[in-house]
Length: 129
Image 1: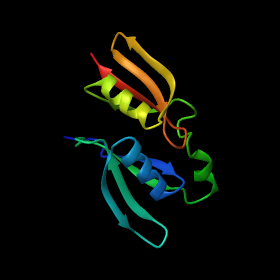
Image 2: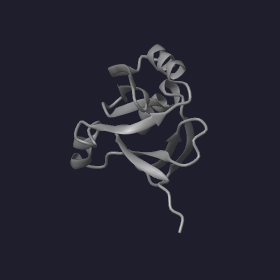
Image 3: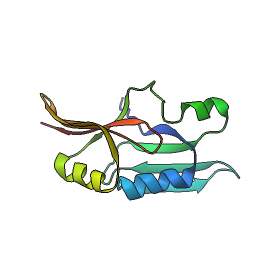
């Protein structure tokens, strides 16, 4: 049996602002943007070159979902963005005003820093050894 995680749903306030952030600030590709109804869209974004997993940008549909925006994991790092060149991507993200909440550090497994997306979700930017 072969299985994989194809998509991870990320609750957002607005489709278009989320698309802009992920494509313009983080340089992700917009893979799909298809209307499902008058209020719901199927929106997938992924890092350039990513073939295995994409983010499904899911607009909050009710108050319970709205409360989760930016805190889907209770304040823990939620997503991990691996790179082949940490310093290149760190500089580009800094130039794009991405807010890093933990500065770069050398760890036994590689170089890592923690940043937040437009809603406050925490991400690791990591280059593994």
